Image 1 (tube, rainbow, N blue to C red):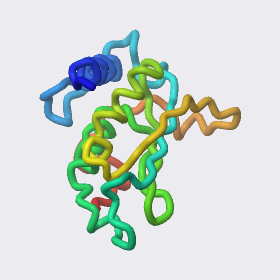
Image 2: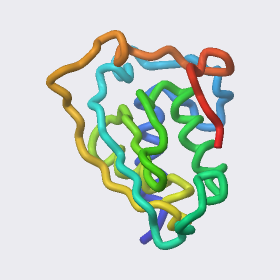
Image 3: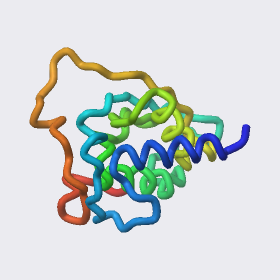
Length: 151
């Protein structure tokens, strides 16, 4: 499978979410018509892939590029929440233009590419929701990034 369609979809999704490829994480440009809060939510569920090292903690799985990838999306305002689930998986709540864009974002995760994780993407439309938690994010950077624990 060629990466060009995946990369193109990822860039389109980032553009729709207000992220600027190559821009510093503090860039705040967001088109009004495609504000992240107006985009649907997707749950990305990560599970151990063929390159996962059983018995090793997250810190010993080579996940720095994975963390950096998701942190950039978080700072751009496309991530609602993300983190480990249990001892060998993860969950990301993501804003994306559509299913194809969410699929492309997951496919471009360095841990997916490396086979450390496998993943699935499902549309997430919760009937019970805390509007304050899911309010339109500001571009996040540095101290504004919320509670972030690095691997």
